[in-house]
Amino acid sequence: MRIVCNLARGTKRKLPFWKDVSVKSEQNYYEATRNNSKRFSKLHEDVRTDICVIGAGFTGLGTALELAARGYSVVVLEASLVGSGASGKSGGQVASGYSPGMMATSEIVGRDDAKRLWEFSEDAKRILNNRIADHEIDCDYLQGELYAAPKKSHINWLKDEQAFVEKEYGYEQYRWIDLDQMRDMLAGERYIGGLLDMEGGHLHPLNYTLGLANAAANVGVQIFENSAAISYVLRSGRVEVICDKGRVSADSLVLAGNAYLQGVEPSLQRRMVPVKSSIITTEPLGTERAASLMKTTACVADTYEDLDYFKMTPDTRLVYGGQDFSFGKVSRQKNPVRTNMLKTFPMLKDVTIDYLWSGNLSVTRHRLPDAGRIGSNVYYAHGYSGQGVPLSAVLSKILAEAISGEMERLDVFGRLPHKSVPKSRFVQLPLVYSMMLWSKLKDLL
Image (cartoon, rainbow, N blue to C red; front, side):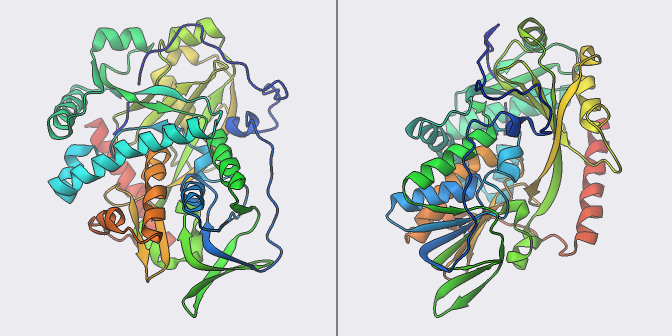
């Protein structure tokens, strides 16, 4: 589940002096404000290693880092550039729990496994914070996430959720935000209350991913960019991954491509659906105007099924995102996300949108992560359903444990009742659109 915290008025942090983000050559704000220009070479030869990881995002790099700490040699293959998928394009929000909420999670998986999943979620936040501190990753991390409720029924659900996690798990970091506090915290009248997670937070997702890559490279992990894995085969108990210009032979393989895994392992395509999410970023609003909109440094996610999420950047821009089911051509000034932003902040009608970008996140039928093992030496984790920043941290550690022979925590995910989705994209997409239209209808009702 997601939420927001206090904002200091006038807080402003300088961006790297060599980045002029007023130059809009980049449509992605995170790419325009990356603090590391390091690139990795393309795979041009055959390589032998202990573990091969496909995907240089949160999960892949986190797993590589954990495995290297355990003494394994690791190769990471990235089809494009480090962080170019969902990891570097996301809203960067850090939440407690899971997308359905813990009451629903307990109904889906049972009380005992729900408690284990909650413990994993708590571990996820610790791992994330420790990685940032231990590897000195400069990623603008700020604490606090606010679940903003637009309706009385949503308020009732949030209060029930708060009571549930306090009773079942002893969690005491949620703070109730009433109407008066909400009006003080956020401008506009869209939200009438909310739940603030003091241990939630948000970060610059691309700079966090780049920091993980540097940390992994510093402990001997080999990272190859522009080196898409085409397929893999099993030979004499080892895994051979075939790329365009080379091959990687490994004892074990980790599939960490999430929504971007494509055809490397077709069996996994029926376990998740890639869903498009788009994000816009405004021009700098200035300290005074930014503080008039959000008197908090926390990020916000509302409680609609088709949720909106937003935050303020250190240079006083509003980053605003949501699931995007638009057809046809869109522009920075004319797109569905800007329309939703104006529902929340109608006073921003005059503001220019400097950046617009989209990416895919993977969603499972129950909106719970999917992780496990195929055969004896192929491992995977995906389907974070919007909770990828924190949950990838703990799943990467759990994958490393499993490869080392400690299967107990990975086995919990093997017990989750995941339902398959249609294999064909021609069926998947209409299904997703139908589900989202139904969600919108429920929101309206």
